[in-house]
Amino acid sequence: MKKRIVEIKRKTKETDIIVKLNIDGSGNAKINTGIGILDHMLELFAFHGLFDLEVKAKGDLKIDRHHTNEDIGIVMGDAFKKALGDKIGITRAGSFSWPMEDVVANVVVDISGRGFFTGIAGVRNLSKLKNDEGYSFEYANHFIESFAKRMGLDLIIKLESSNPDLHTNLETIFKALGKALDQATQIDPRRKGVPSTKGVID
Image 1 (cartoon, helix red, strand yellow):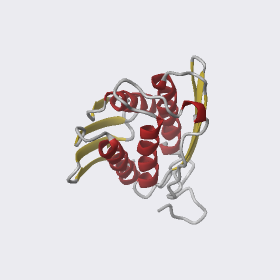
Image 2 (tube, rainbow, N blue to C red):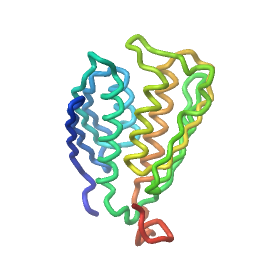
Image 3 (cartoon, helix red, strand yellow):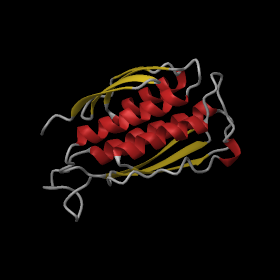
């Protein structure tokens, strides 16, 4: 099997980002985004998805976290899309539910080539939660939306929670996303071509 390893660089007036990805890794992560909670969530994502992931980001954090947070999602989405190549033999879809205390995150993914994400469902009463550095569900939504749309990933996330701790809620989401994406990116030895009746996934 061809190695699914890539390095993507993206530099703008607002951010300078390098992402190195090995889809068929062992869960090793080196993450330095300047946003502490995002670093931790990406480490969990990589560990449980068994992706080797390195992210180095410099951004205009003195202004706010928006550009850095969103652009990291863009570059990670580009990395997964490029590493998957023509997508021959992949399982394509995956789902996983991850519990933590009184929280359950349900994540469903389809590497369809049509990026779709409308936000984390089930957080209406929790939407204003923030941690000490000001990270919130809004930032998480922006990151995940950028990632899904650039990768071409149809992504549904539903959270069952009344827990007032942002960290606990996000942790279940990123762990479940890692597991679901690991399922979807695996090679099915029975599949000889692209897993689409069209014969192609853009």
